[in-house]
Structures are given as structure tokens and as C-alpha cells.
Amino acid sequence: MSPTHANKKGVRYRYHVSQALLQNRKAEAGSIARVPAPEIESLVCDGVRKHFAVNGAIQTPTAIADRELIERHVARVSVTPQALEVFLNPASEASAQIDDPTLDDSCNPPITITLPWTAPSFKALKGILHEPAAKLTMKPESRDALLTAIAKARGWIDDIRLGRLASLAEIAEREAVGERHIRLLAPLAFLSPRIIAVIADGTAPADLTVTGLAKALPYSWAEQERKIGLHSQ
Image (cartoon, rainbow, N blue to C red):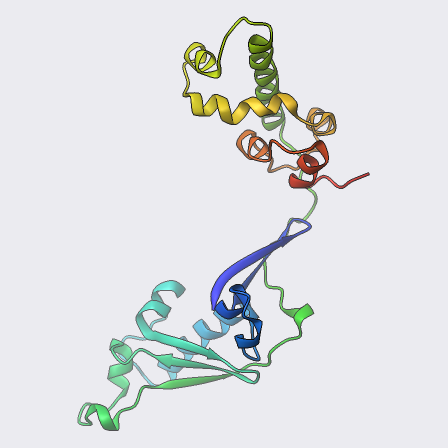
């Protein structure tokens, strides 16, 4: 599985998704093709910590970060409809201290932790990473930066249209910036009037930036509005 996420109404949901499903090979994805990342990660980390605590490991991994814990001690995790099977790394220092050192490798199979877990229905798969408490409003400084960039872009296009300057390269030289920067922002001159209106009155998405807005262009006005999250009227 690979980590991925989806955004819906300002909420980000994290998942682990089968590689087969991501590669459009749905028939090969198995019975569990997608799992909620926060739930699975929490279960595995807690299970590994409890395992070492119960078995009296000399170096119980309670103080290390979750990422280091997994990288150091977990070889893989198998997801089944009724349980998570956590295979510990044979080279794990803590794992080795639990095993009997007098036994050879053939008598000392890798340790597996079985964690009870029930695969949720598709509707319950969502693991919320971040959910705004309320609808955020655009900060005045962000609004001003966007309106300034739009005004500049319109001025640049007017300079070329009226023959005051011959190219974007000349504009870049005058502005003392790279031509790539000018090419990125110039399409803001053709921005949807509705987007300009919601920026001006501060009701545009709070996380909208000059670069993010510029990368949404050039498209039709309807497509511009859709890409930054404005609902059609």
C-alpha cells in the first residue's frame, strides 16, 4: 500500500491504498484495498510499544518517535479483515533481547504481533488529518498581495498591447525579476471577474495565494472558479 489523501469541503483525509488499485488493477487489490491511515498507524505503534513493555525488553521503545519506532522494529504489516499482523524486524535490537540467544535462526522465527481490528465500511474509512473549526476568512495582507499581483499583471499586458514594451522579457528586466516569474503571473490579467470580486471582499478561500492562483490559469472563467473551490451559481 501507498499513502495518499483526499480533500473534501476543507477536510483532509489520509489513507493507505493498494498499489494495484492505484494502478487500475482493481481485481488484484485484494479484500482490503484501502484503510484509514491515522487508525492503522495508531494501532500499530501502540501495539509495538505494548509488546515490548509486556515482554520486558531492556530498551522499551517508549520515548522514541513513531516513525523511528516503525523503521527500527517493524518489517511489514499485513492487513486482514479481522486483524493487523505486525511482523517485527529480526534485526531489531529489542526483538533480539526477547528471543533466546541459545537458539539458532531456524528455531527462532520472526516475531509476529496480531492486533484485533475490523475493516470498516467504505463510508467509515475516513481518517481526518485536519478539520477547520470554522470557515476561515482571508487575511487582509493576503487579499492585498493578490489584488496587487492582479493589477501588475494587467499593467504588463497593457504595456505590450499598447506598444510601450515589446515582450515579457523587457518587463522582467524592468521589474528586476526573472522572465519565468513574469510568465507565471501574467495570466492573472485574464482572471474571472467573480474571483476578483471574492478576493476584494475577503470571501475567497483563506489559503489562496498568488502562486496558487496563477497556477490555476489559463482556463475558462468557470474552470478557474472551480479550480480554486468556488461553487457555481
